[in-house]
Every structure is written in structure tokens, then in C-alpha cells.
Image 1 (tube, helix red, strand yellow):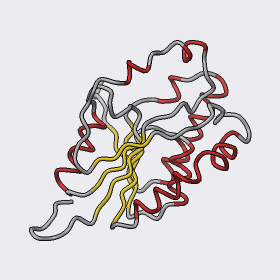
Image 2 (cartoon, one colour; image 1 turned 30 degrees about the horizontal axis):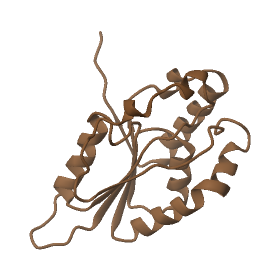
Image 3 (cartoon, helix red, strand yellow; image 1 turned 90 degrees about the horizontal axis):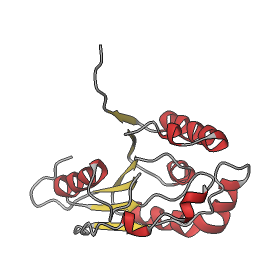
Image 4 (cartoon, helix red, strand yellow; image 1 turned 90 degrees about the vertical axis):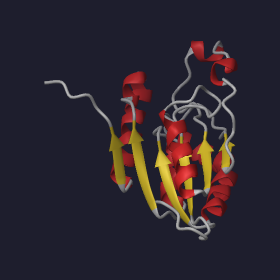
Length: 182
């Protein structure tokens, strides 16, 4: 992935993050920074959206929690998709796709036109699955950092398990880390 001297960058990263860019820096931030430093191209960071059925505490959560003033980096663009929190329901994804995601999917396609596109998924969601299907890319990976279904209950847990399984079967590479316990 290193760039040759006097050669224009030809790679772009489209990354579906499990955390907001402005939250405190975590592994996804380091990954984006590494890509920008090593490839020297652009990164389109997709902030997470609520992809499960809402809970009462969601309405009390402060947005300040996600805003730790993490600085934007040169070459980084951040988008926050809008979606109704109905992804686990039958037809929920179709409604979000038809009403809210068309312009974003079009923009992602335009973003990919500047060279080879890597699609990275740090949070399983139906928008990431739609992007894998619709946006031409060079390679794709799932950065499996957590057991996402474990953070959900009922229908939302089953939907997250299905999304994760679909992504694992669709991407070219799977990135995982683990602690060995004998």
C-alpha cells in the first residue's frame, strides 16, 4: 500500500466506522490515519447510525458523548447517514434505501471514481451491505472488533447476526484480534 515517489495516490478508503470520528480516538481512527499516511489518498469516514430498534435511553443520550473534538485530518471526509431506526423490521432497509440512502450511495460511487477503492467495515449495518453490492471496489474487509450481536436483544440481535454473517461472506478479507486463553 505504499506510494512510489512522484506518483499520484490511486487509492481511496470508504470506512463504515463503529464510532463517530469526533469521539475519542480509537482503533478505527488509527486505521484511517495509517491509510492517509501510507497511501496519501482520501478517506470517506461513515459515522455510525442507529441500526437497531431504539430503546428509551437512546432519547436521553447526549450527543456531547460523541464529540470529543477529534480533529479532522487532511484528506479525510466524514459523513453521517440518516436512517430510521427500523433496520431489523421487515422492509426497514428497503425504506431507508429508497428514501434516505440513494444520494449517499451515489456520492460513494462518485468517491470511488478517483482510483482503487477499499471498502472497510467496522460496524455491520445494511448500508455497508448495500455499498458492497452497489459500489465498485478494489478490495473489501471487515474489521471485526467486537461481538456486535451481543450488544443487542431480540429482533435487533438476530438482524445484527444476519448482517454480520452477510458481510463476512461478502468481503475479501477479515481482520480480527484476540487474546489467547489456554
